[in-house]
Amino acid sequence: MVSNLLIDRLVNILREKDFNIAAQELENITDLDSFGSENFLHDIILERWVYRPEDVPFTFARDIWQSSSKVEDNRALLKEVLQYPIADINRAKINDFLWVAEKDFSAAKSAEKYYRAHVESTEGFDFNFMAINRLVFLAKKLSSKETDDTIRKKLLIKVMDQYDNEDHGRILYLIQTVMYEKVDTDYLIQYTEKILNTCDDQSYDFYIIGEFCDVLEQLYYTKNKWQKKRCVSEPKLIEIRRRKAQAILTAERTLNEQNAGNLMRSVHLLKDVVNILKTITGTEAERKEILKKIDAIEKKMISEMPVFSAKHDNSETVKQLIRQLEVLDKEEALCYFASFIPLPEKSRIEESVTKSADTIGLGGLFPVGILGKDGKSIAKSRPIKKSGDEIDSAAFQESVERRASEFMGYFSQIMIGNTLHYIRSKFKVEEKDIREIVENSIIVPEDRREAYVKGLMAGFSGDFLIALSILVPQVENSVRELALECGEPVYNLNEDGIEEIKTMHAVLELDGVREHLDEDFLLALKTVFCSKFGFNMRNDIAHGLLSDKQFQSFHALYTWWFILKICYMFCGKLQVENRIKVNDKLRKLFEGKNEDCVPDA
Image 1 (cartoon, rainbow, N blue to C red):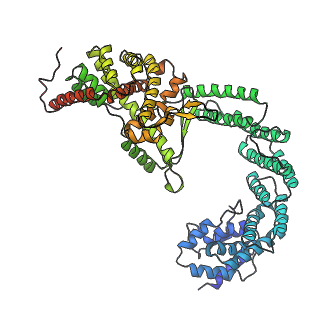
Image 2: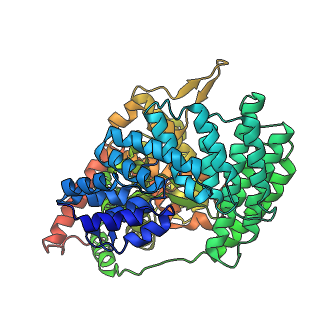
């Protein structure tokens, strides 16, 4: 049963028209359902976080209400309070709450009535901002005849005219609401320009200025019935877009270039300016100057970027590797090198990516940017998880390719580099050794054998610049030949009847290719040659993006080794016979019977 004393206290408080004062006094009421120090009625009366008509209010109060065991008593309390003379705004909010929480239609009608009464009788933007948003929502929801389009427009203009230049964010939201309500466009243009002119030319609040500029541009499109287009030539639209660009440039100039994070921020802001200027005719010279500045900042950024490293002792792994190689002759060692070192397993990498997204929550929600050697942004992966924990399959594949490249880098350092070093120090790899592999490999076209032999031999001599410059284009050709064998066309026909060759990435996505190739092999092809999230060697070499130093990297080593592995994988009988020999010797080694396994000197 509701206490009369409690009702009296609440009514006395709720007579106060200033809801801030009323809410403050409600904090001292301890007889209401609450969470922590706040009771549900305090949150109802204090509610002001409604920026648009569609925003749903009273989130905290609804949580308390729905978890309470005294919902009936609480409802009776609010109904009783509404029988007394209290301030219009407080009466409106209580009724609005009963509508939102209980879907009480009569309460919605009362809320509309008293929100309108409050706005009509009250001065002050802060006091009316939440009320006008809820009034617009309720009137439209209820198809109200009392608060029709004409009255809504009149009251919206009244609240806008009360704006005191204190909170540009809230007035921006209100202008956007008024636009949807189709208030006079000329009035809105003048009003928005007046607000925008209060922002100093040197203001670096580029976000809010940009939003006002977008609104103003939309209003001019509406007024003049202009058709929207990306590149504009109308003087007024140029002026608006330049104002937006100016605010971003001002913000960029305030950043301290000694801070690495600020360097990245500068690049981001300057790119935004370039993108805006692209939409204005005649800005080519300006864009060039900004692009030069971006280039200089990116080089500075990459030179100062901290490198995180961790040491891991792999000496035992290397010892075991050398122990196995020591029982093999040259032909067997080449087989071991090309055939026994595995490719990353797609299933395990997918499991690793999934686990990371689940255990490191933010890792699955935010994109990862990838920078080139000069600090250029060359790729940006999308968040793996969509809303509701749904997985974005394309973003997931990007993460798989990125993780695969990390595994490849590790194998290149530990397994591939040490095995190549052992073979080069122990044996003399001759052209006839490599030619035997190439001529037995069905993936190497007969008219490309010399290129493969020369490229693979260059790698065994340590010259990966020559090796990859020769081999990578040849691998792309071999992949196309493989696609033809899978029954897939490798040319596109354009509108002029010209047959254009498909990219390597497009070929690897063809259904026939995906059906016939092992999933680990297919992942490796994509990651090494044509993924921006992997090594992307096909693109980097074709466009001359690798420096001399980069041709001596572990990525270059892995790429060359992978091409050797591709050749050996398709050697048929030669591979099978050598694998049997290697397996036999390794089995004897593991069984401790290696006295007959040591090759002749």
